[in-house]
Length: 463
Image 1 (cartoon, rainbow, N blue to C red):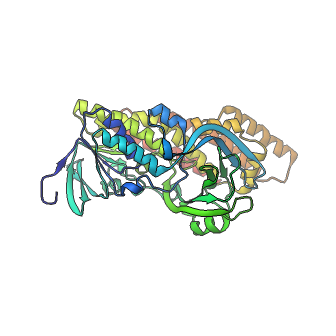
Image 2 (cartoon, one colour):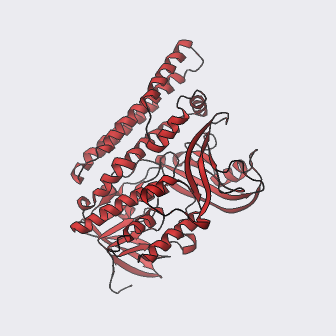
Image 3 (cartoon, rainbow, N blue to C red):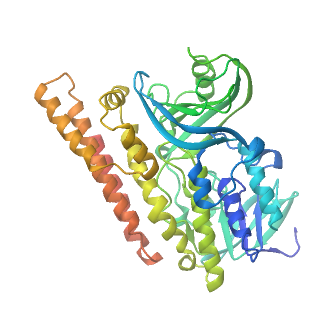
């Protein structure tokens, strides 16, 4: 306590959201490490970040995370309907998932963590990392209005987009990379009870419309027969309207949406939507979840990617304790696991995001009406971040047809050729991530290659 002896743990996790809770769950399964979690919220509001609250079932089964039980499960999902700007074209992509009550599911995970012996400090705030020499050795936090020093071998920043620890690290450390406005969205959503039953509540709805949600989309996610999560995400650098007013005055009053009986909650959040940090670890520090940019860049969903990062971090931390090495090299396994799998997918989706954010409503309508990319390919893109070479061949043929026909579509040949460039760039960036450096010494050269590829791709899109 203040002025007293430090509290000592093997691992201290800052943040009890999806990333921090999942990591605590994985680490507590070994029963060999002393783990503490520092959370700024109260028990009644853990995991309460506003979002769509949907997650694919495979994230639970692949990582052996508990399925949501009882009131934590709001709606079983069979797929997603994606609407074009005019809403005349709809892609129906099938895939099983669930819509969860975030708070109740977070409490479900944390109860399991507490039963396994993890110490949870609620209503507590991480103030700054404790750095000695070139490594993190703990964190100074405020607990019960007193300054408390936590000493640990590994400190984990899972504090969300605010990055309570990461932003206070030396800027020379590669793990301290900051988030640019163009690589984030501002999201605002309402959890509402409707007067009428929702048709086909097992399907989520996503609406692409650059006028309503520039650089993002708006959504209608049923959470039961008469309950829905309705929201929108707008690219941060293009957000010029009050999202709350837009949601309340336009989206929730649009024709075809059942009248609202009452609001359960309203809220907004900043969401990173880019490829992951170039490294999730450094000397004595691990950064995961929104702080590590472990989020799907296309739709902003972060629960599944947070679980992925937590799983790889857990394995690396356990190996680091066996070896007694908590340096970047000792924790590097977290990078090798995440970057070569989920990171490769995330980087590919980041390029897809950059492409989509530059399209007009007419471009989006054209792509969906002409089935330039089919529903099956959208499914493959969402699950594995792959676009088949047949897309490029089909696009090139259509581009030639457009040119020969001399249609009044002056922008279309350029658009179609940019789609072929996207296919090529996805292949290139996947190759880079699948050959992620085996040690910290190769990081900077690898990062320069990635940054150069992304910069070239942006220039190609802006021609």
